[in-house]
Length: 377
Ligand SMILES: Cc1cc2nc3c(=O)[nH]c(=O)nc-3n(C[C@H](O)[C@H](O)[C@H](O)COP(=O)(O)OP(=O)(O)OC[C@H]3O[C@@H](n4cnc5c(N)ncnc54)[C@H](O)[C@@H]3O)c2cc1C
Image (cartoon, rainbow, N blue to C red; front, side, top):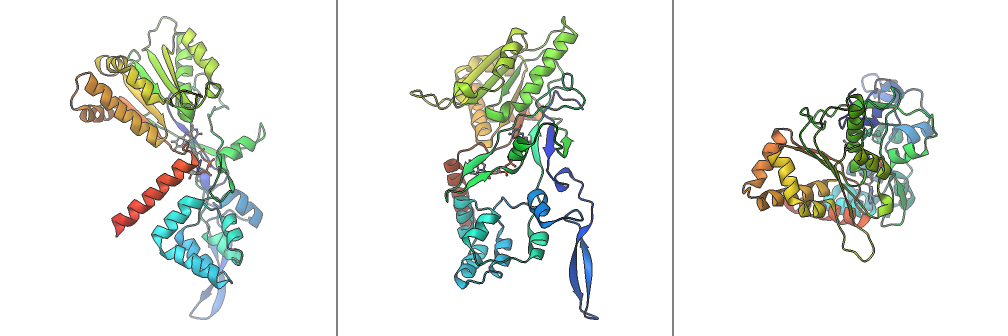
């Protein structure tokens, strides 16, 4: 494993999450029409044997809103006709479903609470609920510094309130947060060959990673510090880090970054604060804009690399800012230049996006739902 890259650790607190979905279990009764005999068939969705409690806590996805297909099945298990009709309607009307889902983001328990006449049979739970998917985390440590048995991650613990007032917990981030030290976690490594330190070690590197987007960059500077220790006379390209958070107290890895700067590994460090009292909101792209000439020089004149990691709206804003910077420095076909930087593996993006606030998530999901409805009609 070569961790001066954005290889990611993939965690599932279950078999399926780590790709070992090979155990047969959960027998199911089926009817053979020819001779009217009943027989048991094997299901390969869950390990065997598994209790209902285990299935619900470790293997099945009960936190995402049920699909329309599941709602349709549930409508048949609601004894109250009003509830049954409501569920049926949501299962058929995609616009209503998307709106309802974006507004309430209901999990399975909330459905059973809100539609209290539903009484789903056990077979439904075992055979129809989707299985949990693995979660990816950028590796935040260098293979040169970590021990063979240690990998560092930088994880935001997800908790938020829905519009109906329910508190929701992210499955994997809270699972990790609650794990006692020394506890077991099932995981596998997925390589990210496009998000590695450049082979040419002297070219400048620009790293843009607000919030947990800083995760892979921690492995970059750790790696460089270690390389410098091993070979003090070697020259390395300048590293510039753009980070963003709400307040100064939320700066991640502050002391480590200061050490990396003292070691001449990180040359420039810029932080944007988005919630400082009595100050306008600032995001990474706002600071980049102010450093237009420097970014142009590092990226274009000195043939540097830029790495962007974090949520999708930030990555789009950074892309627009890069277009502005190129234009300002005399490049007219900025979008083509950025495309060719991507093709030549000098513009690297790693996008994951759940750091948005509830209102932003809800409004965006709603407008997406409405757009989809109109474009389908
Ligand atoms: C390649 C890659 C690398 C990643 N690296 C990292 C990393 O280094 N660090 C890191 O922390 N994460 C990283 N992620 C994200 C990570 O994989 C998980 O998605 C994240 O930790 C949430 O997982 P969870 O199981 O805790 O939450 P889940 O149970 O999956 O819940 C998350 C879901 O809750 C909803 N949600 C979350 N917040 C809100 C809100 N405020 N309002 C409304 N709905 C909301 C959204 O629908 C979201 O999809 C990475 C993702 C990818 C794809």
